[in-house]
Length: 214
Image (cartoon, rainbow, N blue to C red; front, side, top):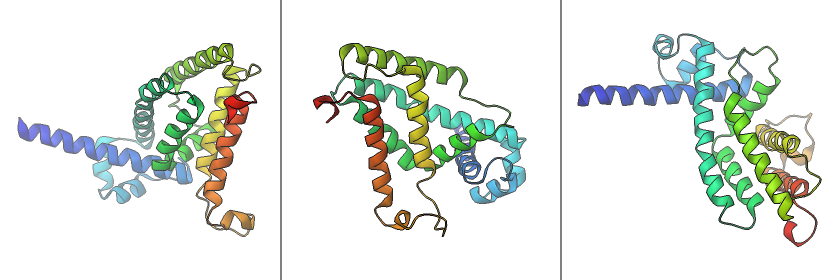
């Protein structure tokens, strides 16, 4: 029994490593350009061993997405607790999201590529995303009634707009050097400057002018 549990834990750990590497490669170069062989080599296993867990690249993509979605879902309770405990709620949410994407920047690249992939076959955020948007929209409406968020916000439209700003910022932070990029983007502090501006844009979009936006 103990040996069986150990094998199960080992298999689960391997699956998690495979999914994370798949997300990294899908985000870096897209689904079509990523091969099962490349993912297997990066994880340190054979292609046959990978396909024992995931019999097709599409199934790997679905499993990787599901794993990422589950990890994101774990963030929601922490955000809800923070939202009831502090005054500067926008900053709390941004700090949590930034911390996650600092650790997992390939998630942002994967999401952005997935949104742009017109030929993709599932998965999608589906019911969980609908629930998150509904929850966030309800919170924005309550904040509008309390005067702590801008009264002219369209909650359902604001959520994907703000989300896309955050995701696209992280998806493009680590750009390789290129003569086509402005020279300022090669400066050491460029990353932090972009993150500060992202936070400022989000706060300006959501918070009313005056002391509450400080």
